[in-house]
Image (cartoon, rainbow, N blue to C red; front, side):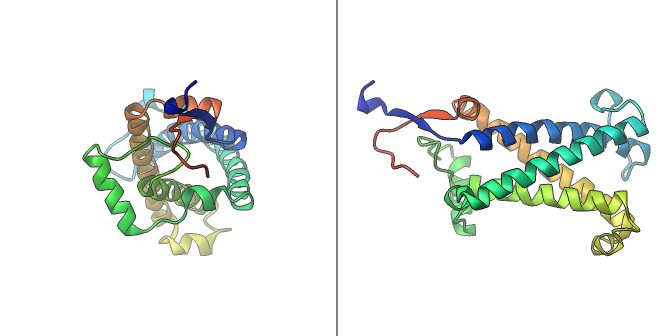
Length: 211
């Protein structure tokens, strides 16, 4: 392999890849079972098609939802602990500024945002991934406030009590789904990012600097 073609290097550590795919599974289960739970007492004037939901009935959906909740929480704690203690977050997600985010979003919309070195996240990616972490935390906290509004009454009060927590939970779910849609669209536009998340390695330009 010539140096002009670059070289294959590690892009994603094994733990990051494992936690990423566990998160995909947990979020998928929580969303589909959550839609079934929503249908039992809709917040708005619509329901989700039954074929798009998981659980079969309210009690079954709740069991799926709570099973996925603990999977998401435990997996999330592992990922966040690794990200902080290893310096992964500092290297990959920081720094990020509003000006840099707006610049990179504009470049992406014009199709001019470079993706040569998959080891380096641009500002838009950094903001999106940080936002996804925040949304996951909001989903867990609002879910606890809905599940145990008396035991977590202080938490529920911050969200406008039980009904307010339901709206926060729903809107956070919508925002997380928007992130997923954009994320999948970016994978479609830059397909070599998918093998990198499976194998952990990708080709980078010979002139690219390491982490």
